[in-house]
Amino acid sequence: MGTFDLGVGSAFWLMNASALLCVIYGALYWNKDKEEKVLNTKSWDRDEARINEDL
Image (cartoon, rainbow, N blue to C red; front, side, top):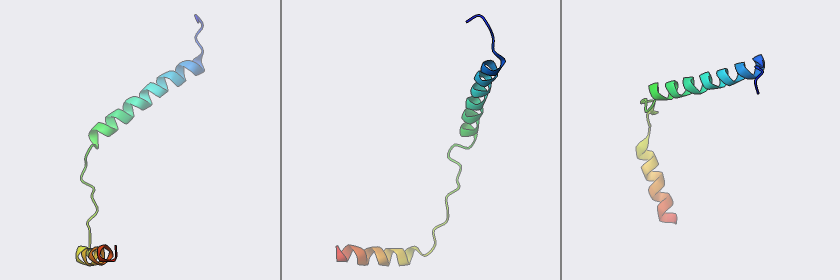
C-alpha cells in the first residue's frame, strides 16, 4: 500500500473532481424555469371530459 500508481491516483482525483463539478452544476441549475408552454388546453379539457364519461 506504500507504492503510488499514477493511473490509480489520477483516476481517484478525476473521479472526485467529476463529482464536485456535478454538485456545483446541480446547485447552479436547480429549479431553473424551463417549463414548456402548454397550448390548446381547452381541447385537452374537452378530450379528458369525454374520456372520463366513457369510463
